[in-house]
Structure formats: structure tokens, C-alpha cells
Image 1 (cartoon, rainbow, N blue to C red):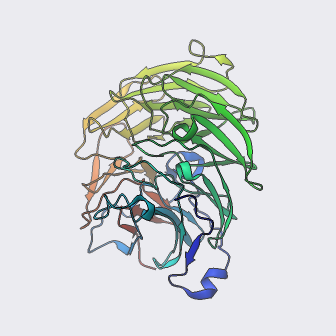
Image 2: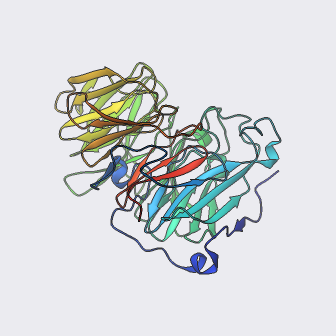
Length: 421
């Protein structure tokens, strides 16, 4: 089966009025993977600390299929991706031609507004370990949605689910699937197509045509990170096997390189005040690097390296410290940004693939099977709550906080945690 020439859209509920209406943009939108700046930090207050299936859940909405992508929030709508028909239980060993990709729109009331079904470009990987065929979080500029489905390409949709264009960034597949999400910069959509073509690819938002391409994306499953500098310029940083790389996001010109994580890399870079913090490796490492250099900056701009971090989950920054949880050795950690000193490295009672979320001076860690842990954002380990839902599904997607609500996505449901409106 080749790429479907037409895409089917079914209006599930809300009627024609909901389909035609434009979405209002609100303060507190969560428009991309890990929210504003890709930092996993939400400027909200009053989020619940404790909840369970009987208390604190505003609504729970069934999804058309699993996925590891996080939701995004724009105005009164939530958008996320799913897949169905193949690679799911009980259809795991069915026919690949039944694989269907989905872009789903859900209202703030939990009612599904529309479900766009997309025919994938086949053959896909016969089996994707843990993460499935919908792992990339969408991005929005407030007017359109940009979605990455690996070898099926990058798609642009309007807010009513109508496709505008589809761009090809490569055709290779991997048993770990595609795990990077698009980022937007000026008139560009930028994706790390490490699996599909070993490239970083920028696409013109208006035309869908390739603007630039940079090679060298080796064993990299992390989302590119835009770094604002004190001189008003912006650099694009990414972590690949053995290297940290910096690019001009407008032209794709390579600016600098630095010795990096000597392994495949999943956690995305975070930054503050022009300094990057890159985590990764099965044995857990974090590297601090000052951006803005040129050429090989390993000796001039690399500040420190610490034995902490995670193999999959990305960290957060709060008041001069870096916080996260390792999925591999199940430890929560805190590093001092000034010198990389380990403030704590404590055994953690769960395995997160989701990245950390900092909101309301608290760190929310969503684990795959053991619920959500709420930690104090302090350089001394303190668990504030452990919340578990009566859901036997798997939680791989990173949680988001938008409009004073918390959203958790499993491979079966989307949950809204907060006060009932």
C-alpha cells in the first residue's frame, strides 16, 4: 500500500458549528513538545497535587488508538496523534495495510471534535518497541498544525483537520520508531529526521518545500532545541551520538560542535541563560555547554559533566538546579547548574519514559505503570504525592499543563486533571 491519495475525516461529535469555528488562542497555551521553549515548564498555579480515578479527574476521553506523543493545547482545543489497525493489541500481528494514523481534536470539555484518519506510507517497521507509530508531538503556530509521522512525512493541517501539504524527509525505519517532534522557527518547520534520513530538515511553512538540510544526525531521538542568546540571536542545538551540534536555524549552517553523549540520545536539550544541558546514555550523564561558539568548542565552551541524567526522559530547570528521573536505573536526581554538583540521587519507585513537567513550583513525573509522582522543586528530595488512576494502559507521553489544568495521555485515554468547570 502506498500513501493514500485522500484523507478521511469523520466529525465524531460537536456538529458542523464546532467544525467550522476558529479556535481562540488563550494565555497558557501549550503549543509544542514540552511547551514554551521546549523546557517542560508551565506558568500556571493552583494545579492539583493529589487525585485518583474517583476524585480530581475532570474528564476521561477514549482515544481511537495508542500513541506516545504528548497532547498540545491551543485555546479551547487539545490536539494529539494516535494509530490504529496494526501494532496494537489484539491486532498486533495483523496486516500492516490496516495501519491508520490519526490526528485528533478534543474540546476542553473532553468531547472529541474531529478525528482525521491518515493513510501511512508503507511498509513501516514491522514492530516498534514500546512507542508505536505515533510518537511525535504536534506543533502549532496558532493557525495551523504541524505533525511528523516518520517515513510518512511532515504534514500541515488547518485547525479543522484539513490537510494543506505533506513533505517527505526520508524513508528509513527503525524498530524504536520515530521519536522526535517538530519545532517552529519563523517561517520554518524543523524536524530531526535521524531515523528517516540521518538529517536535520527545515521545511517552509507556507509551501511545504524543503528549505535546508543538514546531515550527521546519528542515533538521535531528541527534539531540536532553540536557544536564545543574549545578543538577540537564536541557535538550534541537538544531541547526537558522540556530539552536541549547533546550527543557524534560518540557514542550516553548522556553527559549532562539542564532544557529547557516547551513546544513542533520547532526552532533549534544555537551556537557561545561553547554557545548554544535555542528558543521555544508558549509564546516565549530563553535559553543560555554553552556546554561541564556533567550530569545535569542546575545550572552550564545555563547562562540566556529571554522572546523572536519564536514558529517555528529559529534565527541567528550576532556581539554579536541574531535575529529572532516570528511567533506566530508576533514580531521581538534582544537579547544581553552576558546577554540576549532584545535590541528590535518590532511588525512585517507578519507570518514566515521559519527560519531567515543572508547574506551580512542583515537578510532575508520570511513570509508565505506577502513576504520577509529585516532587518538590528543591535541591533536597521530597515526594509530595503519588497519584494512581485505575487504568491498566501504559503512559509513555509527557504530561502537559495548560489553562490551569493537567493533561495525562495513556495509550487508551486522555485525562484532564483539575477543577470541574
